[in-house]
Image (cartoon, rainbow, N blue to C red; front, side):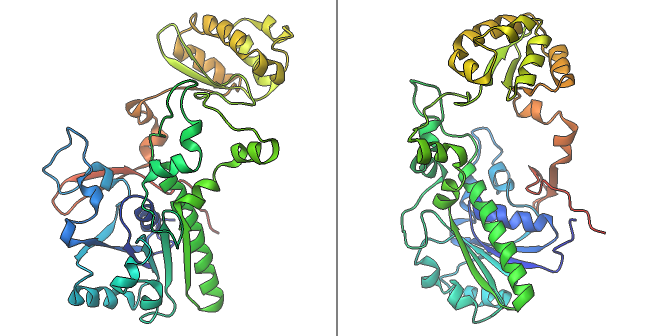
Length: 359
């Protein structure tokens, strides 16, 4: 599968996270990706986004590595005529350009779709914006989380909103742009013609509101901060601590799963209690239910408890930190390593998380 796009050539004129994530996706599938970075600013801004104790020996941060794998980096000043000519030389046999300029900036540099397609009529130009093609408003992920309702909904009741700890809006926008590019590739295969495709972080976030948006649109319900709890299901998102102080979260979505849960916790009579006999009643009496479950979880150690929950197909998970996450063999198989030009080893997680079997 890692060679399915081996003949595809991509020029990445994008920086930060969303655009480079799209480039890395195609690189993982075998495409040749040339990443153009601004030599006047020492490259992509995320090269300098280091953790407080991160090594300054490298010319890149761990953040930068997360979406920049197997790319040929070329430093150019696109305000320079000579450097622009170097880019135009690349465009002639390029299949896809990925860009995330503010509206008007690409045109001023002569690297917008209308300009570049003169060098290659079959070019697919994939553009990312913050708030749309006509908006000059700059934004980073947390601004989009605020403007699209995610920040309002995230956090504990009666406390300040909490940012999702991954720039998830960027990731969602990257997925939207990948899909648009794949459709454009199909169109080119059918017609031989190039395309301009575009998405915004704003629209990508809106498209991901799913049931929370529908709850408002159909029922005028404004979702409130509930921590990890679910407004329609209980116990779902409720967190409990074991005898050995491990945190377990539940996602019990069916009556059968609830009966299995109380069996594991050795309180089967709870399934007959009218307050907890159905999901609807459990949502109403969530606080009372959680008090009982919390007491029972405290009687069990995490490992044997999780083994029993898994055996009986009760949806539950240990809340793990990054060290705990990457003890899992499947997680370890998702790690991509690369030796950079300075000889240092970099690591990141694959952006491709699917299998592709052809016959």
